Image (cartoon, rainbow, N blue to C red; front, top):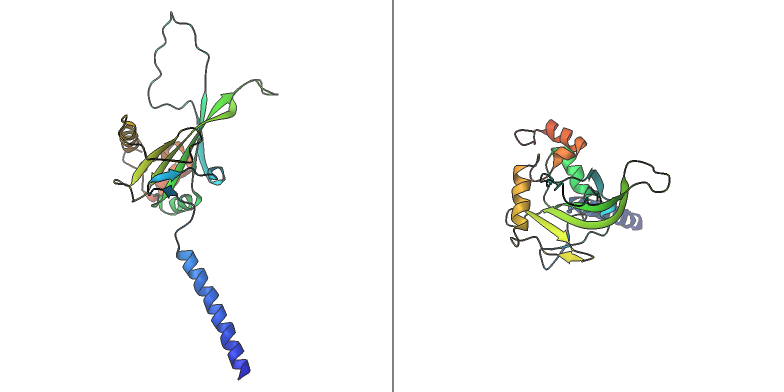
Length: 204
């Protein structure tokens, strides 16, 4: 009789562990965006441990202004931008070519340096200058939101229409992006995935 009870306990424990693992597997990943006051994005502390999508140097959406020949030459300043995405969303995109709800992108801006240490040409990344975020989340009216972290702010509100910041972001990310509202055309490995999955916008 005692042996039967022991066996029942062992079976019960095994079932409990199995059930717990199954529930845990169904839970939403924990690396998505976090908020305070429902919609204020918390600054991701570990974004540099996420998936690195790519870097740009001096990328700009507008043509550079023409220089005035009579003006004094300005010292060149170059900026690097690094883009990261939370790992669970990256894995989902690799399977489907689409971004799941609660995807978060972080764009980190850095100054550039040259002719330092043994480097005699080319440019390398230097001091941190800014952080922006883009989130796909159904809690926002059209499913997407944009954020700009000023200084060392721990959380920020979504960009609004003042002064047209959000409108400009939405317009640009609607008209010019390859997949949904994301610039997949600048991330070659993801571009190929989207092409294979048939999720590229027309024209790409």
